[in-house]
Image (cartoon, rainbow, N blue to C red; front, side, top):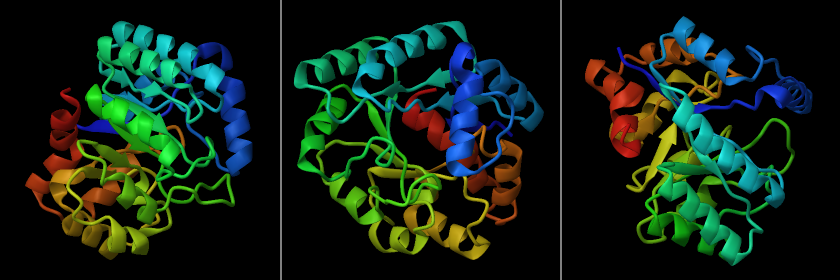
Length: 265
């Protein structure tokens, strides 16, 4: 079966090793490979993944332009790989417009935002300009959702994302089945919201009954396969999803059909 992994992370070769060690120490978590694109491509072959999406996160506004230029270069160079772009909450209006127009003109399908690393609440009014500009250019907004093992704070709660979804025309992807370690809140606030998609990344710990309940309660058409590589192997998430006995047609939707449609892959 074709598998599209919508949630991976890679770094430039010259900083990959140090970045992986720093992030591993912050979260007290092991990783696979060395954080480079070549490492991702190698594990894709091992795990039977056909196509992967990279989700870069800018931790300062001054990083955004450099990340986005590199993203465009990578997307031209590599096959079976697509990188989304980066934004940062405190970009001024001109910088924001320039960066989103640059991404859109170069065929970048989405942007990644991380409420913890970027220290913002998703429903803060100051974020509206970012969302509206993304809507204008048909760019999907991909969020880290729920808790993060490296932080004690939780900015990106299911309740707050439900408010963001009220913005007309916005398309949202929430990582970690809608909110890492907040799956009861996901069931309460997120299920059934039609412009929210959720991915399966880093969700091995979710009880099978609840994962199945969320998938069918939200809609199998709005669930995307993601691993969170290099923190988790795709093959392990594939095994987890297959253990749910969802049926072949639902597995097809999750593993590749929904992502292919949403991101025009």
